[in-house]
Length: 455
Ligand code: NAD
Ligand code: UDX
Image (cartoon, rainbow, N blue to C red; front, side):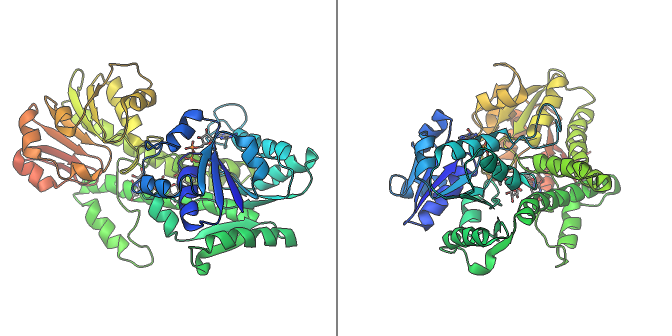
């Protein structure tokens, strides 16, 4: 059997690498328009940083895993085609700022129709609005490509930073198919592949629309938990409660559970905001306006949390940060990834730059070019540092924006000595030992705990 996956991004690359490791009898080729990206997948400098991913790629590459730009050839030969291209928020026209931009998915569907001759299963791996499968089928039929294609929805639930583990031991695999004999057959073919490493009970088979909607709903629920605990964190700061303690209490209720209750400077990433906006757009499209408003609030709370954090930095530093050096620890949207899409660091840093701060930024995996691109600034506007100590040297404040493990093990006495006094730390991830920092002499502000200082 041959599989072709269109899109060698954060989902396509890791997903197919794990599938190739688990199913040695299937030949898998990941294709992309981006030549540089494909060249990187064929090298040892992968375009995606994920723990353990390089080893997985190296094991399968050249055996039954290939990366190529020869898209048409692979589309022609494949039995199953995964569409794993980007579906960003539309920036123009109808639905701008909310709806999904399906241009890339549609281009794939048209190309498949033009090139493919034999019957195939087309799998939507990208996150898309409900009823996209219908549009894809319409494109096939209306262009005379026949009905030899079965469209399945198989949304991906991996989280970045833990992609390898999430793919090897998924909580569940979801496959949606048409309610027809051919549809059911296609679902069984795809389920058969996953069954090579995922227990049968974890493979859920639903109709197409449930599968498409479940993905948006799952992300909305996860993001909602973060916004809920972040909302409580603001209240903690003014009442003297500690959000860590509150989260522990709430999370021990087995009906609620302890995961995704870490208050933070706000959630980032390429999915939560985009998918909730998409959900809100769908609600508006179908006229369920109250539901749209309900989910929109999750995003408003996230924005509030980011603004609250940057506001706290300015007010604590005596209402002005003009010309002050501020050390920024972490720029990725979470630890263990080089991805910065939607990172709260972008909005916080933009705010601080508007206030004319000098930012000294250190992230173990994010490049200077990426930071400049995200902040929409030219070279030289920020100080890009090789390590955390260099960033803190001569700074008024250190702010933690990503929860990289290495930040927990830093020598904060050394950092304190190298900073201007009073030396401030703003912990946007609640990862440091605040009592120790206060003992060293720092003025500490933490999300959900408020200010702590000797004075
Ligand atoms: P990405 O931007 O990292 O990768 C998409 C790739 O598709 C790009 O390399 C792009 O060049 C390529 N592409 C676009 N159009 C193409 C075409 N016509 N032919 C060939 N290649 C084409 O995106 P991603 O993060 O991998 O996300 C892909 C999809 O998966 C999105 O719908 C996203 O919502 C969903 N998803 C993402 C995650 C995540 O953690 N990133 C998790 C679950 C689901
Ligand atoms: C998310 C979903 O978890 C995943 O199932 C889906 O397939 C894609 O979207 P991802 O965005 O990669 O994955 O990472 P995730 O771990 O969900 O974190 C998203 C953001 O929320 C990060 O900025 C993270 O730091 C933040 N977060 C997460 C919190 O602030 N608090 C938490 O308790 C958990």
